[in-house]
Structures are given as C-alpha cells and as structure tokens.
Length: 159
Image 1 (tube, rainbow, N blue to C red):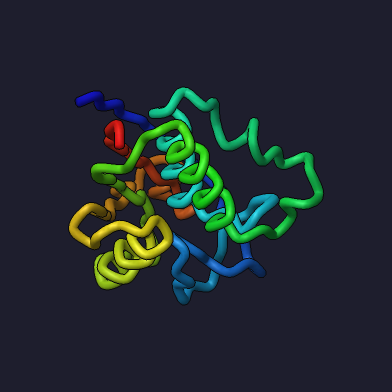
Image 2: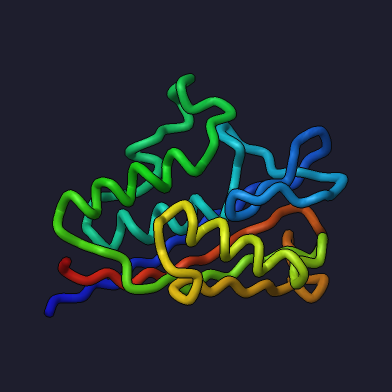
C-alpha cells in the first residue's frame, strides 16, 4: 500500500464588509476575510494539502487570483476540483487534520459544523476530518485580529 502526506496553509486579512466563511460554514462576525474568492482559509489550506500530497502544485497555479472567473468564487469549487484530480490519479483521502488560528470569533462551538461540512464536501465519514481552533494569544497578526489562518495535513493512499 502506498501513502502520501500533504501540508497546506493559508492566511487572509480580516476586513469589514465581507462574510466570514470557514470550512464552508458562514460564521457570524463583524469582520470577514479579504480575498479574490470567498477567502475561506480552511478550504484553501485543505485544497493545497491535497494538491501537494499528489504532487499537483498549489491552489494559486490552478485558480490564480488574477483570473476574473474566480472572483468571489465558492472555495468548495477549488476543493472539489483538487479532490477530483487527486482521485483521477488513483488516490483517496485517509484523513484530514486541520487547525484554524483566530483570536476572534471564538470557534470552539463551530468546530463540529465545520468538520461536518468539510466531510460532506469531500464525501468522507465525519471521523476522517478533525478540526482544531487556536488563538494567537494576542501576539502577531492573528492575535491582533488582523488576520485568520489555517493549516491542514492530509494523508492519502492508493485506491
């Protein structure tokens, strides 16, 4: 049996006037993430992890922020396309482990819904997706509530 690991990371600035979407779930907050698409840092990190595990480059190569067709795009499109490409090469997801770094809003209550949505988007059992939330301890751009970032690790195996 053959396995590969992929690591993804993404960061976006927080700004007024945008919705906050994390893992495909809209979170009530007075600030949202700035970006060309919906700026869902978690789905972007997972997309990068999947692409990296399969040796397929990164999200910016497939969905460049210079391409107007991706303006305000739902990041679930990126995730599904990455999974399609990985599957086409004969790989399947074993599990995902993800961390969202945000000072505010507090995300503990949202973790189950986020994990369930990610599992749904990828056609996985909920037990295959883990979501953690951390603060910046008031340090750096996360701690100063200037940004939110996410990390994702994925394990894939030959199907």
